[in-house]
Image 1 (cartoon, rainbow, N blue to C red):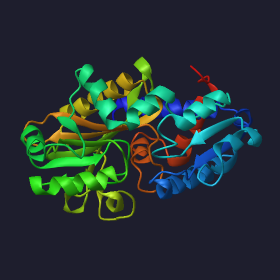
Image 2: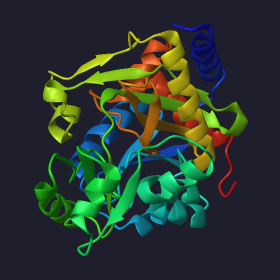
Image 3: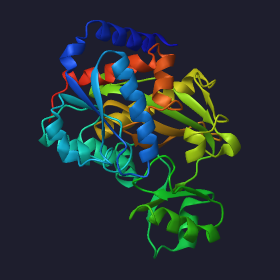
Length: 332
């Protein structure tokens, strides 16, 4: 563990030692929701809820898929922990409602959340900041499939622009597979993106903080079975391997962390997030894939894994993330 990561862990422990649990008040854990990631959100949210209660926090579950989010006003929560993934939880919509209710919440604000969930908008911002991300284009039913292949090469990746957890994602190996891949993605989202498939190591880098003070946690290398990190292999398979430390050269890890930090800052993210990155096997160059502003907190999730490598266990991580709502004002 690097000195920098050790320092972050020490600061977390110091913050929690001085934390007045009673000051957190009545806490809502937003979970479930209405997106395609509902099942994972329930797993994340229940883990967060259990951890907060273990720490003595007066915490309650609020399923935005079963109850109208406007009912939050009736609950008289003092703050909320967002454990929602995907649409209506990670896209700025629930954040906007919480702003109107003047209710402090974990994670990024309205704009950063809305930008980050849209993979096309995200890439445009990254490119405008000179950050590396695979070549891409938006697909429509009228797209010229041979031209797409000529531009992006093969294999290429087709996916919904506003979904996570690899939902609707296809690795396309021939031009004939493109129409079906488009239809699958278009069934989940009105915007579909195709991007060059980078062959190499699949990595992820969690991030904490905000702006100039933001920090990158340890990088994790992901080795899924058959090199297929799909929904099942992300959340249910025990065959997927996670290496932290990655086993890569320190220069490679540092390059990934620096790129992830720049990506996080460019989008205006705050509190926490996770950047997914591919490290090109041929060139050693890292490429940004996407930014997650409400990362998973399940038993297979990656932010808790990186935090543990930095000396912070799951329950302390959850409590620390919630504690940041004491110092971050709504609307700021």
